[in-house]
Image (cartoon, rainbow, N blue to C red):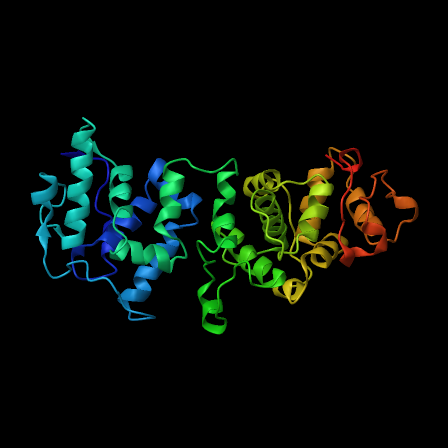
Length: 357
């Protein structure tokens, strides 16, 4: 049968055993274009993370495989796929079952091509394989990937689905390896808001291909949590920082697009992101980021330049902290009701006409 998914030899090489398992199929799908790769990306699964996890397992780091996958019962790939570009390729028993199910689905659909999407759906159908174990090690449950593949988002921006799943405990944030060595525990609704923002910041940077986060990723983290809370309220999560950023007219999609485009010149942050994040609640954290000459402030100023004016960001923050009298900032932006008593008190409620949109 003709296939659009070839064996990912770069991934297979890390095992040294010459057999293609479900874990390798998953890594190959993660690197594929089209709906399957997009679904994994939207769920927070990065191809690079899967490869790193496979290398860790191959080198004996961390826990070994819990699933056997029929690794000892090798099946020639040609018995499942017919003619292949790798005549000597051998599948594990579980990989053979997954590909057989995918081929059967292609035939039921009346198709002729075995695609990455067929393979991914077959992988997600069995949560006892090494592929499912690899997903969980990456902090994602198979059902979350299936939801993306089926296009179920409940009106939430698909880019925010990984944040939502982490907030609801459906997945855990995947921390950088050096942080996993010094910090344990998973963030979720019960975690402190400061710890939550720290983990989400790392996640935002990772999704954008950055190993080390900048303060612009902190803004993205605060906005991501804010917009998810609009769909899935969590009373224990402090959203004062997100409410201020929304009041200033920022939203996650717009800020992320600006970061991704790379058209805004962002200098080095004056302090490390860890210093800003250390124990800071979201409200005071946002105020400091917009007060100092950070990458976050430079990005905010660039985004506001075509609207109220670059200097209104600092002025609005100052007003929110009670430093501008009369309930208005120097740039003419009305301060939300409830802020006059201090930043930590939160914005409370305000009428739509008072907000900057």
